Amino acid sequence: MTDEMPFEFEFHNEIDNLDDGLRDRAEERLVRLTKGHQDLIGASISLEPLVRAETVFLYRARVVAYVRPRNIVGVEKADTPEGALKGALDAVERQLRAKRDALHKPWERPDSGREAREQGGEVE
Image 1 (cartoon, rainbow, N blue to C red):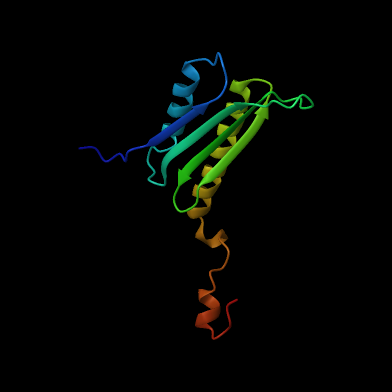
Image 2 (tube, helix red, strand yellow):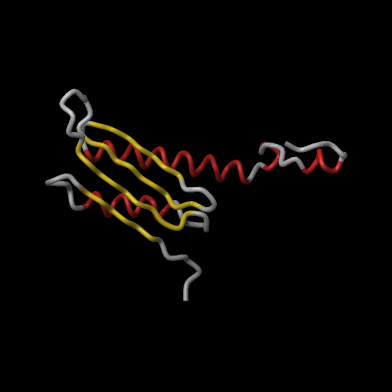
């Protein structure tokens, strides 16, 4: 038995003629983010064409990363499905790394109110 947790992955595609390897590359990129961590337990990706004629963007990608305790969402619009997916994955990765960095720097987190309670003050 391995120490790795199962990774739930969903890929919803509403675009015709999409590169078959795009799904696999997206999943591999997300799975790489789990190495050495237990907070990311899955993800859902949605790719869809934008049908409004007035938009310059043709595709939208939405990536929801199932991260404990709060999920992370990245949304990107682009003129190609690949560009939209890359932008959404970049946004999720950036947010996840920032969240992990903040956890390793407790002195930079907002005050939990413990100090105020210990000194007899009120906590909102």
